[in-house]
Image: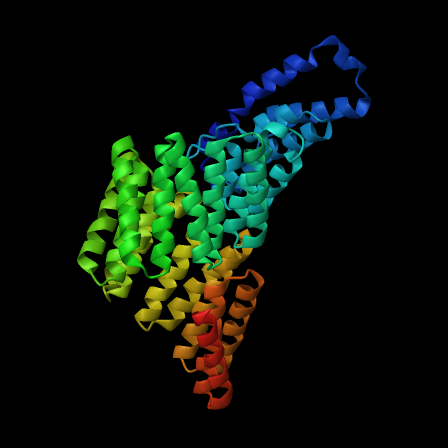
Length: 441
């Protein structure tokens, strides 16, 4: 991850000054002197962390915002929940211009973000839905789908209790996405249909577009490309209608994926190039890195490896520039796959190991499993079957832990291939039988 420059570092600290002035105004109230010494000590710590903390030059991003993290926890110790919430909402002058709590996710500091959200959960009822939704998103990114599902279900209860129909629809969509990750596409479709019905009922065009896009993704996963393209076309039409360029790019990318799956590679490339152009036009670097990654993957599959390396390298540069550790890990694995296709196994292993290290650091279990499977492929192709077996077994174990059905099927199939290659035909046959059972289910 690229850390911030010294000028960016000073800009990063600046937005907390206004909040510090507000806190100092409260500290000037006469009856503050009546507070117990411990409470006053916490407020003094807040003042010092926001006003005097100066991180060292060229230190890590988490050290740059340590003042905010420490101030947040001291405010929680004295029950100043509203002010602690303001810490989370401080806008940072980073390339993505996100609020502090969202920037932590972009940088890959998931455990710190979880801690912040959990500290506030149940303290300010008005934001419990927001906190549960945020936790659900983080857990989903980490591949902890059952935890994500629990958080989204808590969010759903809250939105229903307060009769927030728009929020209820959004949460139903989030639950549908989790079932998509879990491989339960029929249940996913049920939830996305409910979201679509609510969005249409209340005239929420943005929500309607999102629901159509998610339905398209579910049908795509089922291999029902006719239905998938129908819903993504609706998503694209709504994006045009409301002028949502980011959603337009996402719809074009999804349609591009369908074209690729149906063998229309030229149309697939056209769509993904359009997505890249839109992302660059609106300055959406997050979407730009994804579009570059999609193009890299398609060129890799088409055997155009130099172009694949070019686009994956562009995506990697952007991911590092904005500090997106999750995508950085993904692209490193993809680069490893290109070198695997080129037969450059040592380079492939190096990139997969780098991707694996990032996934472990940020707690991305899904990414960790993918890197292990990819390493298994390299060792298998090299004829090093024992090494392949070790990596495939670790991949299968992680897939089972996070209930990744597709990963479990892939892991069992890979193990069957190794046993068969080692001459253990009976065991290989048993694993292939298990694979067929899972894919039929």
